[in-house]
Image (cartoon, rainbow, N blue to C red):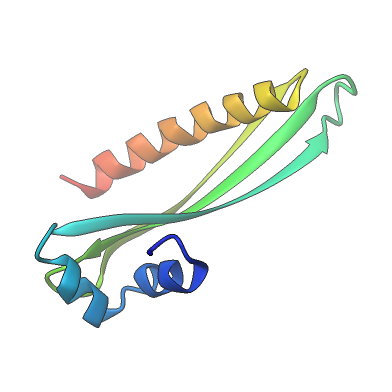
Length: 105
């Protein structure tokens, strides 16, 4: 399964052997690693801040290489952890859309 950490790392590293296998099913694979952290908001102690960093790659299954990559960061705040995470996710999604539109022209 690709969901196992070692298998994901193989995919994320643009392993040519795996890419050749995947080329039967698709031309590109979008893969990303997200790291997150949660901290109290320094300006408003009643709020929680969630920071997200996405390291993303567009991998060509034809060439076996990375066709594009980018990093996106977002911070969301909220009264609850769920609200802060949702706000960070929405901001990160907007950045990813923008980056993908720039890369895929």
